[in-house]
Image (cartoon, rainbow, N blue to C red; front, top):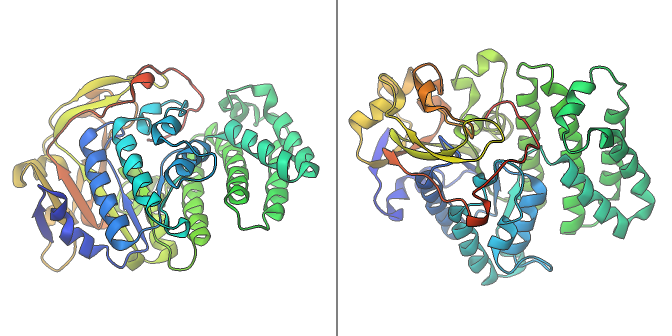
Length: 418
């Protein structure tokens, strides 16, 4: 195991050497609301794009929202000249995950980087997630209305299935126990029709196909959600892994992708107690599909600080205090052993027991209760099996939501998990 103190972006050199041959690099976070995690992830991502030629960043966000950001950062026709304009259109709670100053800074850099290069060499920005049923449906309407009006019947039939539930598609999941499978059949028909139409190589056709995949995935997700257990989690992460695969295919042979998501998604589930509950995640699936040598999983964590989160699902975001990690946890151990910031690269014969054995590893979601630290917020993990490397930030601070988006409240989805 190698330990490198972090002070400047050049201190990532040992980690960059470790991931040099990877086709996919996944960079996690222990929270969805810490400035330091976003900033360190941005610094590493810039170097991966600029020095190693990675082709895109795919995030734990909705495809339609991220597609607007993508069109801005690659300078596509109709794309916003300022990425902040696109980020400002994120309306699904929790908006602060992506509509924040840290992502805005990265996207401004990415646009400037891209516009100095030919279109075929520009790095994209895409969403992996499954929640945007209505937005994706509307995007399909817009595309088919211009390109293939004859296919509108399939889209309208699928829309009518969900229309009785309004914007609260989680109610569809509850109702699906008592209604026929017609909605499932209609979205499958819509997906097949859209796939058949995607015969061109254009970005609009690919986006329409991906939106149809989102509609199909969302239908499965909300139907599984009501039954509890691992099914809805697995539907979501399999959808994200499938989207990543489509992006790698879309960008062509030899393409390389970066994933931004929570540690619970990118750290191999088989090295945690998630496996015992029947759960998989995109880190595990990527290793299984592409091979361990082609995938690098990088976790991020810290000991204490502040974070943007909400006390309840759908409630306004707050800046909360993250108390010191509990004794015996991964974070407690790293606080005792490491400097303020460091990167650990796992591997080799001399790894200490505390990275190869099981220890509690903190995970803070968009909903957080600091008083629950004593009983929850930790995932038992074998750190060196869960990740290939780990970035340590002892004391972290809250990120900065974009000013117009500091008040939230829209309840559009209610996912299980982080």
